[in-house]
Length: 396
Ligand SMILES: O=C(O)CCC(=O)C(=O)O
Image (cartoon, rainbow, N blue to C red; front, side, top):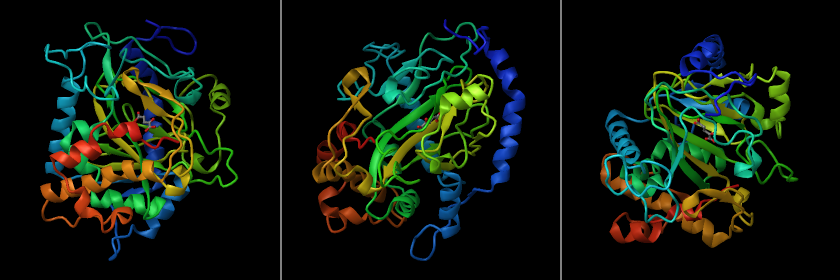
């Protein structure tokens, strides 16, 4: 396998893990010193506390602790496990590891991306508009491991009832409103799966691809991503970010790595250390990435983002998921109707949640105020709004 360190030597899983130990320890210490973490704090009107909003804009990320309760976490874990188990046994296969029809063969967008264990599928390639210019260190997995592992899962609102309900979580909606305004719109979703000793890396990148040269460019123009953590995350398996980079324009990633002696262990980066049920918010312009998971701990991160409406209206998308080969291509121009149709998933998610969690005050999503009865969760609405909803993602 092409599993080489930057200096060309082949690393085993254990060597990769040992080589990172000091960096991980130091990063964790620096992460904990920043102070941008804690529970969700809302004021009497349900608005996110201004101190939290300010900390997010200062650092470009925030860790919300203890957002998802035990019962919901169990439902999400069961849903994610089920989805992982129903993945095709290898790329292009029709059946899962147990010989059952794999999930989603009929979906408009292939729900699984499989990769070689401990590999970096995108670094140094043109994939995703070439936004991952450098390659991460890869490693050889332990003997007896599969040739391919699940790396990403798409279409969670269609494939996982608990994930649809999560999509309408009132606290997460309040955070989206605080960052992107009450008329916020969805972006896309993907579940990152980093199995212990197997999970691939995600090369350093900034997410946004459309607005870097816009005259109205600012720190929030490419939106943000939530990550709902189903298990505790560590410096070894977690997402790393370089604080403050969301506000500095395009980062010269190749230059940073070159200045770091060719090493992907960037000195200013910090890991997102979370407990199970914590939720991170990362600005899509923040420089971020994650290392091959050579540790003994798995990570499953339910990732979904939101934009300002003004960032997508009239804009041609650039990172659209296309068909069952999961290529990313230039997309459509997003008009009012497209935005409405994709945003309707939020309205249905809020109602699915209301039906499942009766004691909870549902979030009132301003673009659908007064239209709630047209978007009640049920079979017909699911078919109309949620079926293959990710062909309508708003990807900028
Ligand atoms: O969670 C990860 O490892 C990568 C996440 C990421 O790159 C993203 O959300 O854009």
